[in-house]
Amino acid sequence: MILKNPYILILKLKSSIVDLSVVAVTCAVPGTRDYRAAIGIIAGILIHGACDIINDIYDVEIDKICKPKGAIASGQISEKNAWKLHDFINFGTNI
Image (cartoon, rainbow, N blue to C red; front, side, top):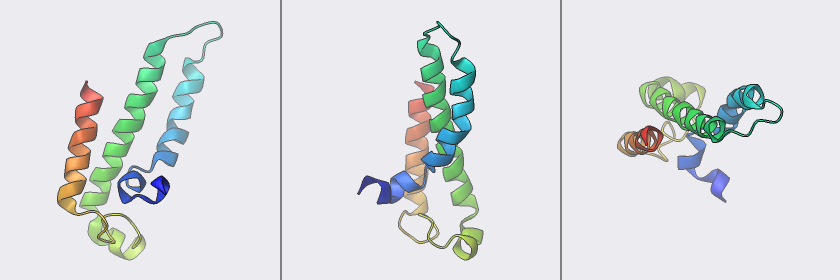
């Protein structure tokens, strides 16, 4: 199942979507359709995911104790591959 994929789990999309729903509600001005709001929401989700990856990389020793099922802490994703995913997301955000 796609939701069990460690590369998806590391992004913590549920928390990203909840945080950025505030942006969606704020941008939802009645009668206004603006593609920039959608781009901003998608970029925000990607940026939040990249920040979560950095957090998981630098806190791997703490996560081994507190969150042993985390993608990096459990060894499902190597630190090298986590950096590659982070770089890919950042490249996509900058386009």
